[in-house]
Image (cartoon, rainbow, N blue to C red; front, side):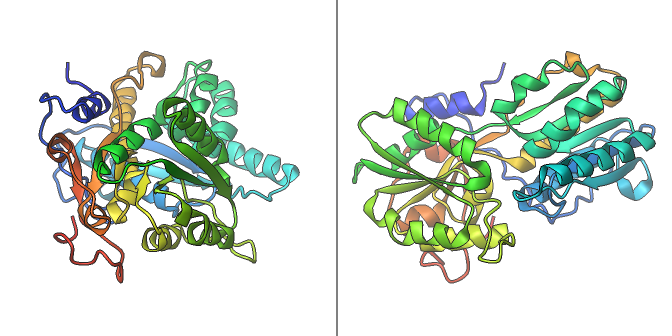
Length: 371
């Protein structure tokens, strides 16, 4: 049995020799596959449910991975073998409880009127609001989920028709990677940064880090306001040795409008005064130094495989997320060069390497071109 990337990552940090070549980085989510479907099958009818928007950055990557792999497995929207209907809850932090209930009921009623082979919920919020209720009302229609925090998964296991992929986060392994790459300047102070919309995950990562590295001084900051986010990086981050980015989605401007996620990430990478490590592949792809990261593209591909298994007759209760890890050991060569960090040989052999960097960044031209 192949070892998981997480196990190989731990071996790499121990400088053992049992490692394999780096996997090929996934395509960008805007790419369209031209591969010919390898299998034929009857029409696959899916309903996709999002919490806020189908155009959020993580959703775009995940959905692209889903459609890419489904096409390779014989299901393609262009020839009619794949039919998809999308539903959006439009739930925001300040949506009242009454409005939330009304939106959920509206989507559930619309789903009930449709005829689907399965329903897919993307993201923790959509999954928490839709999956349990739909699973009780429509016991014969499978519900699959993805991009859901691990903390939510236990509550979903009570529903036999519900199965999916938790969104892994690996703060301890990423911290070990940072220490290996920063041997010339030991890390003693770390700022753990997350968006207020994902505060529970940031708090969990912070607690794990405090327990695993008792000699390191960790400081946790979470906020929903982009202006506060900027102040944290421009002031507090100057007093630490590195920043560990947990999440950046859902930040708001002064008029309480969502700030574009790509803009937030780009600004963060360009303005971090110390090395920035991250738990999400999208950040490393754009310029963060590295980490053992969750890849929503790979998660989408793995979700597609589960969809096809269910479509072919496997009951959701017979599936498991075990062995379906979407994590990658990833480094950004320009980020490494910007901070003059080192790459241990085993990490060099194992890691997926990116060389993208935001336009105008100080690391421009430091290494290679876009992946």
